[in-house]
Image 1 (tube, rainbow over the protein chains, first blue to last red):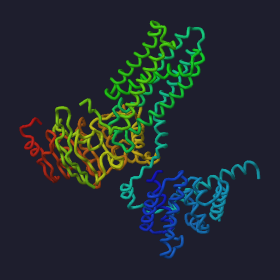
Image 2: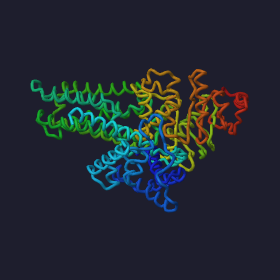
Image 3: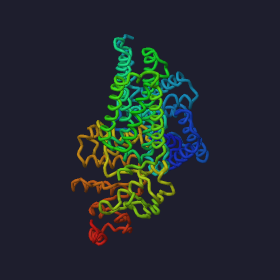
Image 4: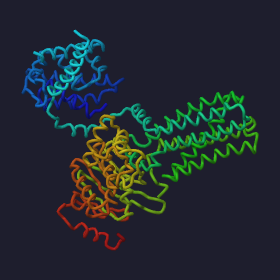
Amino acid sequence: MDIDAQYDKIYRFCYYHMKNRTLAEDITQETFLRWFSSDTYRDRNQALHYLYTIARNLCINESKRKITEQFTEDIKASANDPLDAIALRLALEKLSDQDRELILLRYVNKEPVGFLCEQYGLSRFALYRRLKRILFSLKEELRE
Amino acid sequence: MSKEAMGKEVINNKFMNRKVIEALSEQFMAPPSQRKREFLKKYRRLELGRLEFLMIQIRYIHWCVWFTSIVLSGLMLRALTCADRDMTWNFSSVSALIPFLALLAIMEVRKSELYWMEELELPCRISLQGVLFARMTILGVFHFILLAGLTPVLSSCGMMSINRAGIYLLTPYLLTAAGGMEVTRRIHGKESILACGAGAFLICILEIIVPQVQPEFYQPSSLHWWRLALAGALLVMAAELKTEIGKAGSLYEEAL
Amino acid sequence: MELIVRDLTKQYKDKLVVDHVSLQLAEGINGLLGANGAGKTTIMRMLCGVLKPTAGTISLDGIDVSSEDYRALLGYLPQEFGYYPDFTGEDFLLYLAALKGLTRSHAKRRAMELLELVGLADVRTKKIKTWSGGMRQRLGIAQALLNDPRLLIVDEPTAGLDPKERVRFRKLIAGLGNDTIILLSTHIVADVEQIADHMLMMASGRIVLDEPWNKERADLEQLYLEKFGGEGA
């Protein structure tokens, strides 16, 4: 596994949940430390699954100690992006937590479909259908 | 909706999808991590699995080796199945080509020494021993399969037992391989190639000339000579393997 | 991090090439000066696990030289090295990255980073046989850095380079940061005078100088001649 790249992905995942840079990095490093000291896995998807599970649990533990913030921050607008960043942000907020996380893992972290199926307990077919549905609803929101 | 309009709709859809996906990355962007390098520098876990490493080494084996091996085997097959010559000649030509098969393997396994790369490879995490072992395994298995394929052909064409056929094929191979390993361990660089090539030629010539002079060469009565040679070659190969896998890598000790 | 060398010895039939050397190296640039044949290369080969010592121990923060963990932290630029024919600069780095245990995607990223660092990014797809000596040397330092080493051993890196290349090389080494133990051997005073934090001198297999170095000093040559006065330099 490309640990160098995976660090960035877990960090992004933790940042999404914690909204705090230092906390996100602390949790990322703790995640890897725990993952390093565990047994080897049958395959890569299992390894990823375990990695994200540790990260998510650590985030949950941490956030029990602080009030969870809304998914609203400084709106990031891009100069050369014709798509309305604000609209996209609002559209994302309308999604369920799980759908939003799925988008992060699939389209931003670009994790393999096999792993996602394991993570969310879905068949490949169900996963593709769900992704299609999410994208469709995002586009619908943007069209308005 | 017309077919055209539907087609346009699909393309539009895909275009929109891509745009949305690109924009999503920005929405989930995190500020750059500050302690990453420090952490990763401290915890150096091996990223590459042993099997993955083997796969990578297969890709680094020059295509010439696969190609030439197959061509040589093809020639040997042709020589064996060629009905219009006497059998001794057929055996000779097959046995004469086998040293070159082994030569190919030795050249590829010892590539690091031949091209002065071993100084760079020895201090790597997966050190040169790992590479040598990988190359030996890959090529050993490959050539074993080729020879195993030729054995039944030799057996039927030459009307001999599989056992005997195997010995006739394996002995020149292992003699050349063992000799090559010894030579490349003591001599580095281009001289090594010449030395190994000379060795292979020697065995090749022997296979051609000896049967002419001593017709019993390929008769069952002479089989014990072959067995002796094979045993000797196996011993040398075993010692070589032990040295390669066991040593800590002492370069140029003899040269100095 | 500390590299601790105790009683390191290398004996060939009738010649004692390295004579019971003991060292303690810390992070920063450690210069090793000495004439050809003083034993510098032999020591460096032993520090890289390429040559087995006759006696003595070498350890990096307690990790022995013969272990894989040591090699994971090690980067080495030998005095001379070859390359597989038909390899491009990028191929070369990717091949060695695999030996250092990097996955393909990590290797590609790292190779690109390093090629840019050493200024070879625009020739990376050209075959090494078309490259100049200076370019190959830069490629050599790039491969030594692939695994982000904590111990970097560089053996006579500027031999055969023109003055301009030497300055470039010096700047590159000096810019490598303070969290790596760098040991740089040379017989050219100018290579290390301005960049070393610690200076070592070697003659006939023994260390004759081992002290911190002030980069402002410009008397390294004098010091060297003092130490090696009567002996053939």
